[in-house]
Length: 364
Picture 1: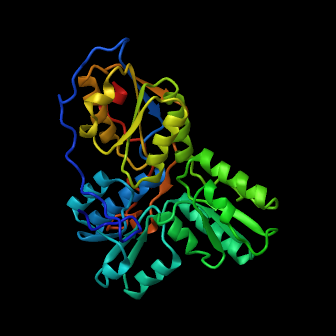
Picture 2: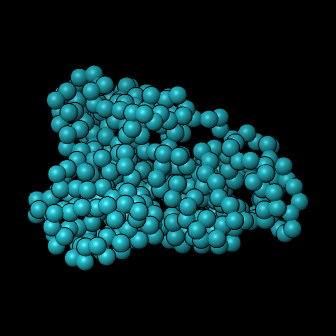
Picture 3: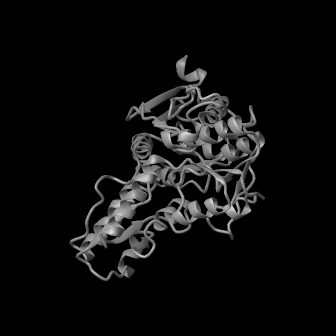
């Protein structure tokens, strides 16, 4: 078991499993021509790419160990890979030796965590996704204006804890549409909703609809809080799911956006949908009678893991791969200021996160 948790001391994450085992799946006959529909966009978003590069560059610049509060992103393969390079993941800043370098994860932290790092004289590098930072700023602004903030999100998720920490006395967490009936506010005419960035678009809008039924003067955030990448990946899998007998979603179980992709696939027509961390977890029986397999991945998933799934599916006869493209993504974020230059003060060619990382099969 890993010593890293997902914002809940009682829940520990499993160690990464063995990567894909080739020639494991069998090519069995089905009533049709086997094919794969590969959703695009999928995988790494700009915020995740930025955060992972931040840890890699911190290790290059300052040497191991570099400490990271929580998982830098919610993917056990990424965490395991960075651990091998010298990153040490901790649950809180109190576990970090004074004077060390620490990276705050892409999910963001509360002001109390920032202060705790300062109290221990830690050199902090903030890898919070800029889209999460936007929500933090909204929480601060609405809190100062004495709004009551209804934050739609998942209890115990690091992003939710960080956002609530920016206006703790003004924020109420709404976990799902079922929670709306129990929400209590002091002034129903001065209420605003915000949301975790990685939620299901449909479920979030349903929660907002129910909240507005109770509080007709509920205000919207100035812009959509659910991030572009979450939305784009859900739109893509909707289109794939309509034609898929089976959908395979690559990503870890503590990744909110990954788990939502499974739900969306089922909701929009897939006959079955499963999540895997590695291709080796695909079960032969999942493929029984399956003509069309849909494949996608969560926003914290490196493309190499998708490639392994495609390789194993090819062994089972699903070598015809067609991309289903619903959007093009070219957003890039600047790295944290501490990492934009090398040790000699020169601008670093890896100063941006969010680049498209293509593999050979994509350019063939």
